[in-house]
Amino acid sequence: MNMRCFSERRSRFMEEMKPNSLALIPAGSEQLRDRDIHYVFHQNSDFHYLTGYPEPQALALFQKGKGKNETGRWILFNLKKDEVIERWTGTRIGQEKACSFYGADEAHAIEDQDEEIPKLMAGCQTLYYPIGVSEPFDRRVNGWVHTVEKQVRTGLSAPSVRIALSSILHEMRLIKTAPELACMQKAVGVSCLAHERAMRVCQSATSEFQIHAELMRVFMESGCRHVAYEPIVASGENACILHYTENTGPLKSGELLLVDAGVEFEGYASDITRTYPTNGKFSPEQKALYEVVLEAQQAGIAAVKPGNHWNQPHEVVIRVLTEGLVDLKILQGSVDTLIEQKSYEKFYPHQTGHWLGLNVHDVGAYKVDEAWRIFKAGMTLTVEPGLYVKCEPEVLPKWWNIGIRIEDDVLVTETGALVMSEALPKKVADIESFMRG
Ligand code: GLY
Ligand code: MN
Ligand code: MN
Image (cartoon, rainbow, N blue to C red; front, side):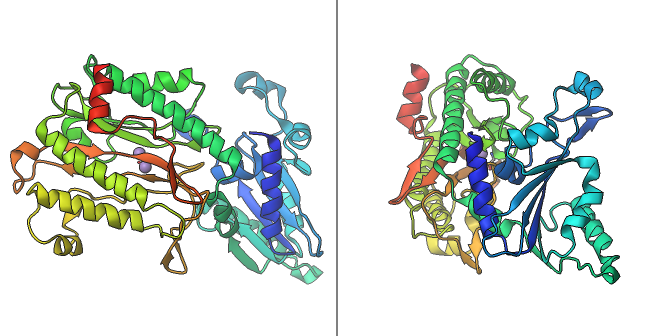
């Protein structure tokens, strides 16, 4: 993504900040996996959104002065160049390039933060930061404020108002711009290719692990280094475990395979699920349940449009699923009563979707002033109904161990919804014909 995109975001962000305020956003930190081995580093998405700066151990500070026409300044605290360390772990960006390439107005060594930040805080009224998100960071902020408090007798004043960073930043992140949508569409496209590969090899593969490997191969071959989340490759009864990530079970002919996998492109996530028979042909029971989930998904997607609210797709989905379960005699009773009693939860225990963006479960409040958020063009979300029938004594055995989810990535447009993952087969006939081909 062009560096200009980040500088435009910073301008919009600082426009929203109150006069005489500071915003503090920490970069992600490296996490130890075991002894001295780290997990692959992933940048904090709020920090990335405003800076595009890729290293850990950094802190972005945005300063807005008192003046009326203040545009604000970006001050970065980051790692210093160090020849010896760079020999082991690669080139560091350093302070000079942080300004010349990444566009910081000032850059200081991260070691200087405890000395510099209280000076910047003195006299400033409002602080924005991710309040309550990380205890260590809350403590650091409190420590800096405390340092200023200790000097009040010299005439300095400490910030008296604290505002959650999300009130500005997550509202911005909720509406995607054209360059963001291009990244998301690229991630979705690569994920679709990976799902197609999985569908193709599924009949000759013998374990979930082989399918996982094929997904990773397509992701990496397409130049995408990070998954948006650990892939779920769940066959047979494993498909009824919602967040199954072991992916080591055998693939048995006649069972369904549920694959929930999405890659990231330039930090933007995709999140797609398809469910299909390992032998390429749905059994009558698998088909009957699948058609119910598909109808629910199509109705859910149709409910995504400007003016509708966040929960409308979920409300439509639970109605279609409940009607389907009654038609198939898996549930008995009146549809309205079953919905009221939430009887569907036994077979559909999750929500119908979530915002999608830099995080797979992206930021943005689902309710505003206690009312569901109204859809607006530029929002992106998933629509992902499912049905999961375990060995329930009150359900006929012919339905047991069928787990189905169908998940697509959807953009709210001016007039309705665009399914970004539309290209991937999902109708019964299309899946069967794709798998035959
Ligand atoms: N893959 C995680 C989710 O569907 O929310
Ligand atoms: Mn999802
Ligand atoms: Mn998913």
